[in-house]
Image (cartoon, rainbow, N blue to C red; front, side, top):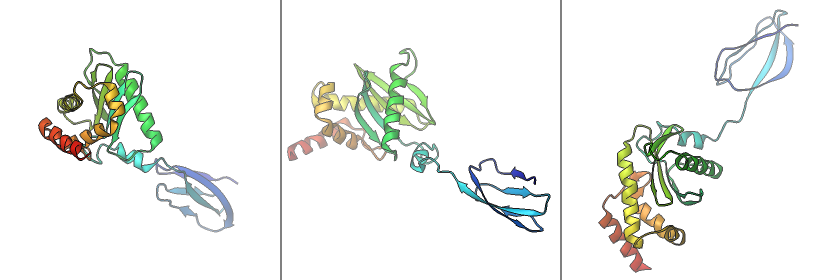
Length: 214
């Protein structure tokens, strides 16, 4: 007995499970959502099959890296030292913890090993990373591939100026022991992946008001 199986959809991914064979005088056709399966049986017997889709990757991760999901939006901000320790990580797209660790590792390798004579922006997956180095710290922002790199370079510099003004000559230890204040400053500066306030004076004044409440 000979069967010919023809797959007419290139994106079909799954497992075909043999169920039973029943004598019939016509072909049995199964049309799953992602494929069209035709079984040609020269002995006039039809074979029932069932299409079982394989589990796909997390849809949240794929949607987060989709460039068309939300253009002109900051995906994440990372602050890392030369040893790869992440001192600040803010994500504006839904990612699992394992994916976040993977992203931080890849971004660190990308910016640390990059030749200083190259530009401060580099392609990362379907987006691009803009980064600047201050002493032993790397400030990295992931944005859409079509966004203006110079704008985000200035955003990083403005964020560093705000930190330096607030902590009076900021250093890495200030960011480690006052991480909650760093996140407050960042939330005043960027909200939901969009630039919210570009005035250094306004942000410092708001932080001063929060300091009085403490």
